Length: 337
Image 1 (cartoon, rainbow, N blue to C red):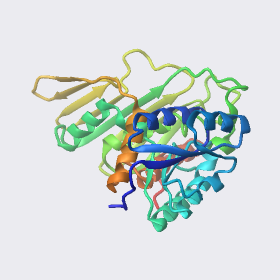
Image 2 (image 1 turned 90 degrees about the vertical axis):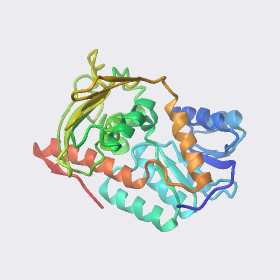
Image 3 (image 1 turned 30 degrees about the horizontal axis):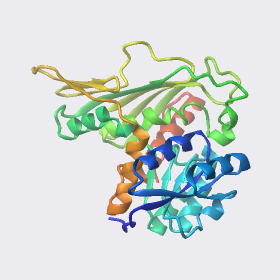
């Protein structure tokens, strides 16, 4: 149980780029419980535009924004390499934190971030928005109830045809600022989804990384990863910016001792051996809105979010192990703090 935050929660957003639009729209949907009071961006034009949109106080330096006494929580929408300094600054200022993926980029940063958050006693939530898909929530409920028994296999897929070019890709084209390539970016989503459904601790990974089409970027544009869990379960993950997944490909699936479940992201099919198949239809929801509503409500109630720095470090550990495996051609251990 963490300390509660009075409603409406006052939000300071770090970074006014594209992803900030989804976050701003989400805060507008819970305007009775949250208010964006400050925003920071190094681009004067972008900052002026966001100030005009929100009426929030603008800052050219996020390290100044975190000191604002009119801010309770920080929402980090910055390029990947800036996540750690932003988290450290926010924690030092006693602000709660919502951080876009990935949490950070290295084992050293993971320890630094975890220590800082815990020492400050603030809440950090990782922005794992796909966990708020209704089909995912229902699948997790079924798995936690033991309906499928022991989990043997989890598969996740998140692939799409990305039309990035050298002019539009920006900081994502460089490994120093992105942390790698597609795997640590879009690939982060099917990785945390796999871990969430497996409900176990990842211990090792094997990966094949490829650059099929976006050859101008430093990192990979596609990845296929196998993960071993301490429960004995195996995870299989496919992710790409080079191509759209083939028709009929499941977004996620789980096989257990008593049966299986699978979903395209909206329809969830559950097949228990010897029983009639159950089909659950779900309407699509705005996952950023659901994620941010959860963050705000947890701060007001003083409750632990669905994922914190603990889950963020676990996801990063799998991705870094996958990168190490690709370099060596061997299985690699998942880091743990």
